Image 1 (tube, rainbow, N blue to C red):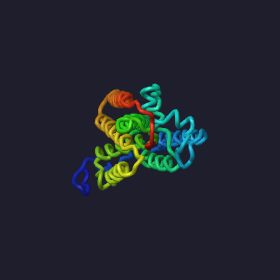
Image 2: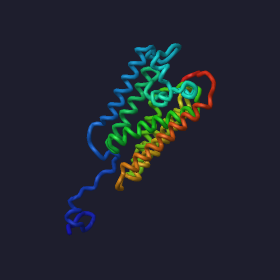
Image 3: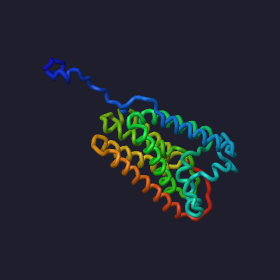
Image 4: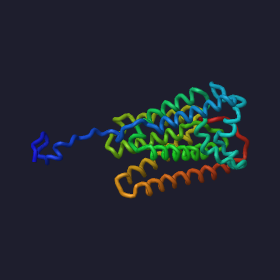
Length: 254
């Protein structure tokens, strides 16, 4: 045994250092986060090339926007199911994409090293689908664009990871950031509260799935099955609520 400041410990234990409680558990460049940012920027450039102004969509929005925005009417009556995904990669102007990509960079840079690239990418996609479901549930007849639902999802997963690793949610500031963003979502018009809440719930569920089974064997099968179930439920829900509207589209939410 070896004497230490906290009593007698075995030699092996004495050589160990207490690890600081942080969300990040692995090192490395957040490759998926950067790839998602590049993808969103490329799509935005395609939007602007097809007619969307840098200040936002007004009047004619161009072919990319018109054929990709999330819209219940087009999903239900024209069977354009791809909108459930593509709407999450479109943005309404340079300010919209700038804020979203900045948020994605900071949240993704914290979460991706903690969960690994594949888990992070899967949670992002599932959260995007859940956000589309939420947006259609609240406003199926309003075109919706933006990565906010997916970003809310990975932020929700980050909160779950922090909680399971003993990081105080309120002392770390995560809780306050979430509250501020939710207040912002319900305060200003043109914000898809359904998309934000749907993405957040999807991310919370996926984050809990990862953390619950991260210490057990056969993790991939359980975790990926859980991801798939949330994704399928989100897609099915989105298609179901999209069919509740028969009106022509109007307005815009982000």
